[in-house]
Image (cartoon, rainbow, N blue to C red; front, side, top):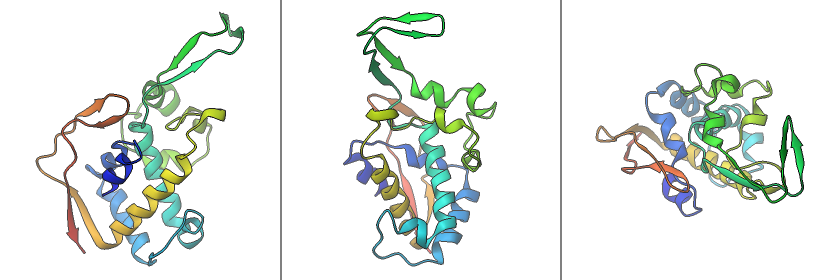
Length: 193
């Protein structure tokens, strides 16, 4: 459901990874979500109605997007000749920013950068500048806030009704094309609560 909703917007895959082996994160979100019924919510209502769920879920979503950014590479063009450190960048130069490499850099995210740890977003310690899942600056994705709210609302509603698990047949194999998605699809089992 989440994957098809995201696919309809051209976003493939990132929210699935936190399910694998992270029952603590799922159970924490479920315990918070179950206490607050959600029938009709909008992006501005979620933080007011469920502040604890919203903050934990934001950390989970951000960590999923850090590990599996929708676009693993951003391209920008230098408008005018620019000095960057010891380098002179000529006008019209195409720059490629490897988002996936930035998001997996141990100098920025710590030696455990390959691990799923939502807590790393609990403290505003400057890593936000290195978090670029939807781009940055004036050309950031205009739908990023909507996409993030949609993910959180859908996930909250699903977790209120179901326990999730990955199918035993799931093989983790991220596939890089324009976006990152599961190479063999994603099979999630929904167990009614």
